[in-house]
Length: 122
Image (cartoon, rainbow, N blue to C red; front, side, top):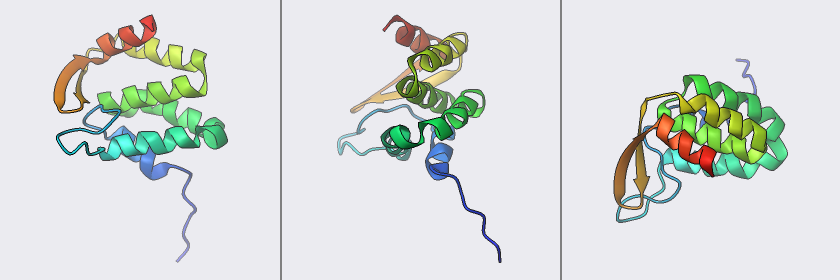
């Protein structure tokens, strides 16, 4: 059986695409990192060496990922290139999809538009 070689970070990109919660750190009493957050950090770590290959894949997530996944993708694009990140946030600014957030033990909710507007002010 022939096996095709998978691209770098395919599993992590899939986790971002399907992310149901936006968290940039541990959540809950135990401070556990959700799978999508682990994937975000793994991709962030790989940007130096693989940024050029990851950029189009992250840009694609802006149109097909869950709302949380779109935020993760926009944040990573910001790490690759400030202008690409700004364009991503501008693209998300007009979207009203709900995003579930976690900050430690505190669960919250916002919209893509509100989150993006805050990032554009930074």
